[in-house]
Length: 272
Ligand SMILES: [Zn+2]
Image 1 (spheres, rainbow, N blue to C red):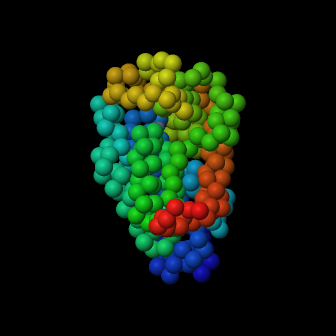
Image 2: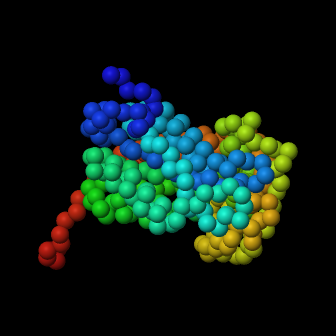
Image 3: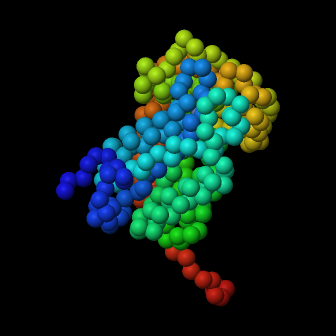
């Protein structure tokens, strides 16, 4: 039977799963959360953006990827004072991601990528990917947050009109991308800018955070649920950012494919 494009994991038969393993495909797993994204964006923003990036990347390199269902729920306890968020405990979330990755490794897949759309999932998916790699020493399991590569940061700098702090949450960046994906779902009349995060020389909140990590309860740093400048968002910026995110995801997949699989060995003597 001909492969569908993109290759959706959940639609495969078991012989097709075996074939996808034999083709050494990268398992691409989008991850996000449901949480408040200001008065103008749906609560699925992080999950939907990650899903869209991965689907488009999988369509671009159909022979190299098998696309997994999105990990829709993530870790967001600090948002719970706003209506809407569904928060999975950090350990449950890590265990869940490890179990998904380990199942794929069990079936023979050697290259796995969690592509994440939610800030607070970052350290947890980093740990989850490490744990899968430790459990399956011949497997390359990685995680990445979107629009973080050098090239993507260059595109962000070119596109943005807001100052640092304008691209944090429900911001110029996320609102633009959602406008590019589904303009009907965004209520720009209700978009408001806010930057109440206590910035300092080392702690700030933007698409790349400062080195000093600080995350209080969300309502302690935002009245509207927004951190950033969504009023500066446009669909045109969104198309450019989304394209950069898709190209970045493709390059992550290609890098994973280019890497040799790890080989574990036992050091028994001092090398000459
Ligand atoms: Zn978000």
